[in-house]
Amino acid sequence: MTSANSRAAMLDEAGYAPLPALLPADLLLQTAQSLKSALGPAAGSRNLLAQPQCREMANHLKVQLVDMNLLDASSVAVQCTLFDKTAERNWLVALHQDTSIPASGPGTPAVVKEGEPYVQPPVDVLQSLLAVRVHLDDCGADAGPLRVVPGSHHAGRLDDTQAQATRADRGEAICTAARGDALLMRPLLLHASSRARSPVRRRVLHFLFGPERLPHGLVWNRTVAGAQPASPAPQEN
Image (cartoon, rainbow, N blue to C red):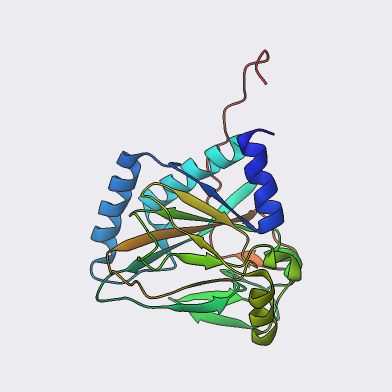
């Protein structure tokens, strides 16, 4: 089994898969600098696909993931969120699933976040999505890394009691990362993070990819289609 096939199998079975050293240092640096200019002292934003450098990174990610058969070529980027954890902003995140998407639809209850509608779609929509967490900084075991419950994405939408029971049954995996690493995950995967024990800056860009057209009358707030990967020469596999 090839490395790409192994990661695809892990993503399907466990709901997450690490991709070490996915992004080059120059792209990470350019993106970090552009975010500093755009956001200033803010801890983050959900609407970063409006930023050219984040759109470029989304395009870069799509080409790589399609080439590795980890993302469908028709997928589009629909969201980019920055999480910027520092010694001064050292938060924890309780166990949860990501069940809201940046979209709207007729008759669909929505909440407004940063001026844009977010809805809770049916489970079949959430199962069609892929999140890609890109690390702009190293994130060791003491830096409040993501903790995930392997295989929990297969259980559908869970309430708090069900989530706690699933974690007790399946346990957790700690997702440390180096700068430039990425973590693929399904939105329905249970995940959490603790406060950092040794606070250092830990910036993560969380991209969300999905189908260009949504069912149930839903429409994305914005999309970035990205470039298609080059077709291989006929003699290549």
